[in-house]
Length: 129
Length: 370
Image 1 (cartoon, rainbow over the protein chains, first blue to last red):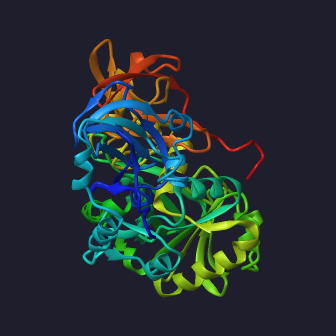
Image 2: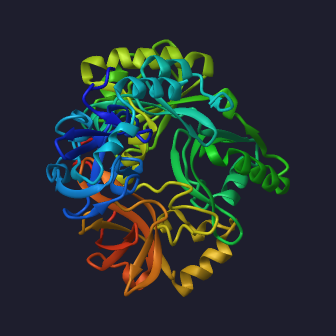
């Protein structure tokens, strides 16, 4: 699997996409594959301030509960309410329709510290060995 | 996972894309494609499970029946040869050592099928009890037996393609020994742990891969799929079947767990009888109940059950239930909170989420449907 070039990635398998001063955030394809069928999503309130690395939500598969960590600091300006009824969107389209939140970035430079697609693919390879 | 034990079907699982996990020290597939898809396949068509991790203990000899009667709480005395019976096995305090299936394979020969995690414990306990019954022999056959479970409404036509035996006349909770299925000699029983019609097949370990392949091949036109532990758990859960280690432990009794109908006080003495009789006379203080979440959230094993701000019980199993499309749980609550309709709360990540006690089983297959 090749990962979208316009996203940045964390070691915990979240992605973030820069959209001007905002960042759209979701789980990577690897994360959804590891979790299996996602059946429940808990999202933050709009307006909540997130620190980088802070838990912003929870996804639950049939068997497991996982925290989601924010790849960057900022204020939540949008959440994907569709996931409340269709959590399986994260399985079907993790880097697209399965996005989770959008934040107003407090420091866009934070994104430079995250992995690009190439580095993330390498990280996955190492993890699987 | 190199230190994990492998069933004879390990290579098959890898070939079918099984996602392997550690289950009671065994490497077994949690899923092949998706827990939800496999769950629905079993409810609507058929699924094939590897349950070779389960243990088989044979009890034979002139005092075999006496030993079985002493060890388990259900009554084996009226079992005809070919009959299968579910039973708790208790310690002297009435707590559950295990829950198991008793197969009567002959007048003086029984096979107990026990949970993988309890094989060592059960075998030692039965050996200890057999001291009082010198003419009963206890043998652990677990390493010499593989077990496959074919579950779902299409199980019968699939097996019919592979055997000359008339399995349509094999009734629920009966077994037949020496059945040739795809040329493999099996003990076949009409039993299962999914709430659907189905069969469990016991064979020699070296024959198991051939049997596995033959069943999947024959089952293809009937929508049969390989199925993993993940859906085994959601299927048994919906059908209200208890799981040792979750609902059942050494500290819970069959009466608390809703298994009272499998405790036969009038059959003569058995281990735990006194303690259970006392509990029955005094009345149980807590009871296993099913509940459905009202608020959004999934109850999980170990989450506290809270009423009026106080912790009153604990969730033993909980999940999203694919057939019912609801978040459901099982757990112990004080008897006064056990009536269907009672509102309780489950503590999920620090928040009290509302739930309502409902009848178990959550799911029952249609009347008349095998």
